[in-house]
Image 1: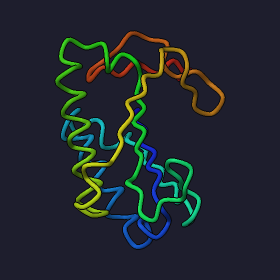
Image 2: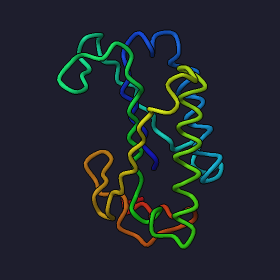
Image 3: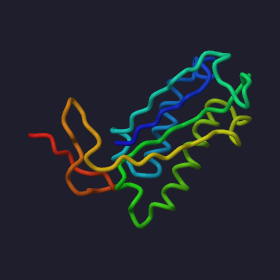
Length: 143
């Protein structure tokens, strides 16, 4: 399940939440396919003005920082380098398209791989089975 966490100044997010969630979800589905649309999770974390610093000083308008987490199997596919390049480009373009093109060159995207057996929902590990379509591991919850 792809998880995107966007950290941006609260004023950058205000009024853009719906558009940003939709654009980021589209970016993920464009790379991994439509199966990813229904399971993509987007968290928007607004940081109050004055609470984002660089070089020891508050920054007036920092570019968003985006963390993209997905199961490790997605990054071990034979085409993973191509998919990672496309994912970073699409996610950056989606954020810049909603929050402002002037931020594009400074948007940070971090790709984080979660090893199998390290994701749980409702108190149950959900990814112990071998990878399925799209590099996603199966669900081990009881039926």
